[in-house]
Image (tube, rainbow over all chains, first blue to last red; front, side, top):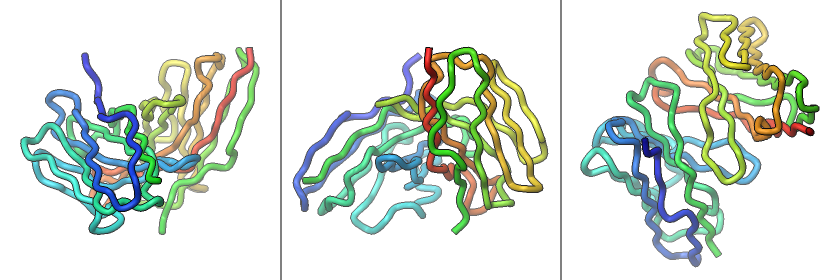
Length: 114
Length: 115
């Protein structure tokens, strides 16, 4: 079956611009997670959703970052006034339950802020 | 803050050898420990997990060992193959509270398998 998909695969933007990153989880998975991975580092938790609600957004670095999941399926990570330090690979994962440690990851979106 | 980390950043082995990748963790409240494999340009892929009340768990060609006394986790790969070349991350998840639902990853070990 289809895995987690993310679009775009690459995004280049200029400092100060707004970007949206999309995640399509595995069908039927109720839990969805966003992580950020810098070069040479492990993924860093940003936010996770259980259904439509953000169950834990403690990893969002500041108020320029926001994520939604309006219908409990597709999620969008939104970054306002992008900064060069936001450059990273943004990973999305889903699982059938937030307590399940087998999270299925997408290929990521590589964001480059010039 | 509490974190999960790795002893060795790189490991090179010959095809057919056994590989051991190590990880130190500091959060004694973690309930699950998980190993992920990440190939270049891809997202992490689940390999195996172990609950905190276990010492050892085996999968297909992989074994995870947990030593809670010294807060140490290891991944053993038997008969390592070139396709095993990747970055390996250990991660932890708590059973509840602020750790529930989110993985905390270590920095990763690069495994290179030479044919």
